[in-house]
Image (cartoon, rainbow, N blue to C red):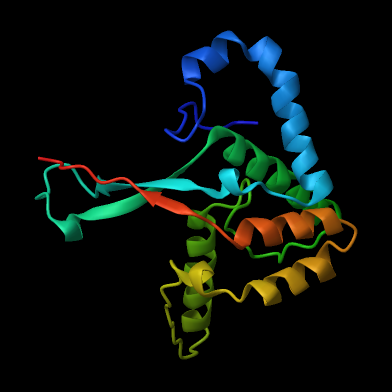
Length: 186
């Protein structure tokens, strides 16, 4: 599993100590990660994120509009979410449940390929003397508006034999806590 190497300020022990004691900690961490999907429970402490304002580009003025929030989760939270994602992703692939043209969140399905497909479709229609209309929507915050109950119903339909995983997704989606960390950047 390829995860970010840095730890969050919410982590109870520093990264250097985790690295030095990985042989002892690995079985414990593995057990913690496996219990969460099996029980369908995601501890409240793992839902907490530390949000840091980061300057969008180097050289911009240090004013509010030039910052964007970066959410940082604890190591155990990131690893557990990744393990659950891999479980669902493997199931979706095994049973061919992904839409054929979905490019987001899939290995070897890059944005460039989606753009090439759209460009090719437009050019093919134009070559056939058809009128082409392209409507673009900004869905960058679309997940923020998803009705969680509808999402869970869809998950139940597509991955019905992973009920504990669906319960886990429910616990992750509900009760997320955020801690904002502000500092004077200048």
